[in-house]
Image (cartoon, rainbow, N blue to C red; front, side, top):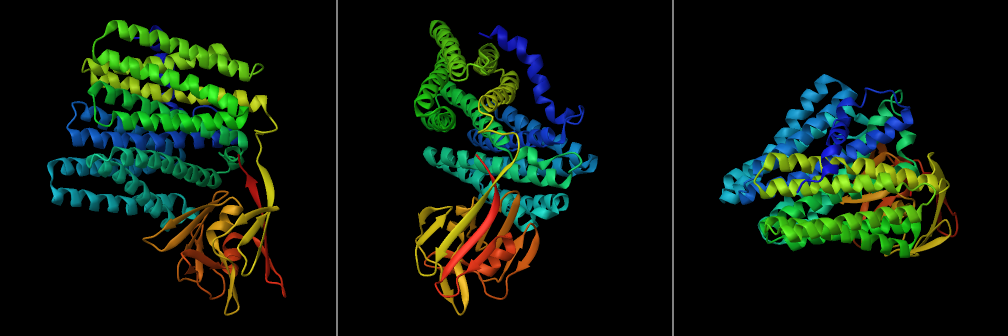
Length: 529
């Protein structure tokens, strides 16, 4: 049974879906525009990752709705192209859209070949995906030269690898691994979107004030959006698994539960562990009611469906009351309750259409359910930041980080806090080497290891740096930096970098004790939530 509230909200939600197309239609402050760009790209990239994996599953299974799944993925591509067209012009949109579409086609061909057991076709599709990663990296490098072609290509390849990992595990019926990779692919896609959004903002300071996407308030909005967006699509697909009686329903439901755990942690970080637990109980009750609705709809058990719908309305009212109680001054129970019921109304309508085999309508409702998470995340983030303006300021904050170490010792201190290392700084042929990962993470950088390229990559405050093993150089934001001749090496399974190379690459200040082997690094970094 379709919910009246869901029907009445459809027009408003369609406007939300059109945000990428009309982004330039209204004048907004540059800081707000930057924050909106981050959220929009996060949503588009995250949606792409999840839809790509599910569309591959549908193609592999020969599902009756595989064409509609692919079509929804295509609509995501159109919105992404529109967003980039608004930033870089018509020609960029014309370049990106067919390239992105070719990536999707190769993924679906890969799934089709796997289903048919055609290794030749599967290899051809895999080669096409490799070519896509290289070509897309070149396009992004032309648009955002400061990010560096090598890092962009590695990011595109990593995305493809994670999507294929999720699919291969699904095809092997290793469903736990499949959904683990699915969540990793989603998180990687959103992190990539953050990086690209920062690059786009820095490139166009007249349109975007990059500081607007680097505040604790912006981080809160992005974090809630990421988790709520993931919930929306994962819930809908879990509902489909329930309807189909699929073998991987339990694992899809488990992924949904893991998302709920992450939401609980986010709420607990604001309101405390007790409140986090209370939130999760209400949230998982809502999710359980949604899945019960799908099960009842599939079996055409009208009394059970009515009971599930009634319980769903009650769970949503409890959630809205939870936030009203937690945030009595800035909480908005009627508005939040409307958002919750509208969003779940779209999901239940998707189920109703799916059961009837009306797949085009089902996927339209799925798309709208995903879009409805945007205003919900906005509402929650705004209420929390208004409640705690000192904890979630709308201005970038910075903090000075001081790291001290000792040659031959395995203890590191950062702003007085001690961290135990499994390898110590070393002096080799007059060169001071320090363990790259632990030091970089101590000052807030994100570190990744590319085994194929034998390269360690750092990301911090919108910057990227790559440290190839065996090289005395580093690539920083697409530019090569040299630290004086000593190479990055591997010691006891850890990457060790000459301190001169690190300083040249990052701009951090280093002081070395002349007699006691002490090492002191200082830097000022943006403080993030």
